[in-house]
Image (cartoon, rainbow, N blue to C red; front, side):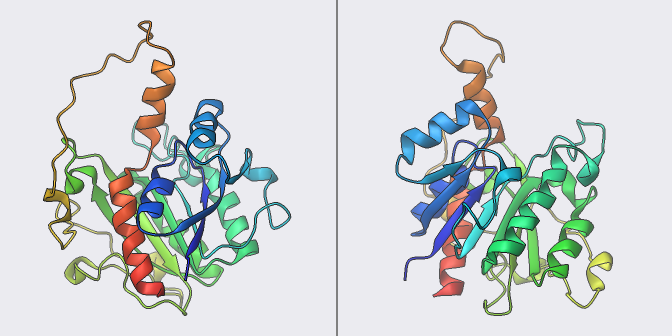
Length: 253
């Protein structure tokens, strides 16, 4: 059985690449940035694509098994002003929820910066619970898949009652955190040891990434350099997405 997915806030395709490596099939992508859209068109030329999530719905996106997306972090990040989910950009989370409500996927995977733990995770879990999804979550650093940087990101995996859980934590049950549909989400305990996530299969040690030199974030004559850096900085690490995708495949099949 082919597990299908749709990608919101697709960026340059970090989720998409990782999920495809896990054996899943991309049916559509939503991305508003011009440069990122060109990258998606190059690597996924036959995938249906929309630009503005606010103009998407059941009329132009087909139903899929999984909806994923790293919604904007600018209002959540500690580098911002702290508007959280009430901010104009990070508030697009609620547009993602609108699509989930319409398309009713079996699984929803959301990604954001670790600051979401204290700047809105309770609302994220509560909103998912209100439309029928239980959830688990954890910070997974890029370092856990061999990157020479920490790059902590929070991943939330939400699912209907038809899915065997846990998904994220089946190899790490002691750090498992799960929301409660019966109104208990507001008392959820945050993951305290965010640096100890264990991928379970020595997955991250197969090949360490080569360290990269420091990068000057200015235009220096290399075409699209600033766009490339922004795309990479915003991207979900494909190796992390692949690991999550493989856990989803195991849970669904």
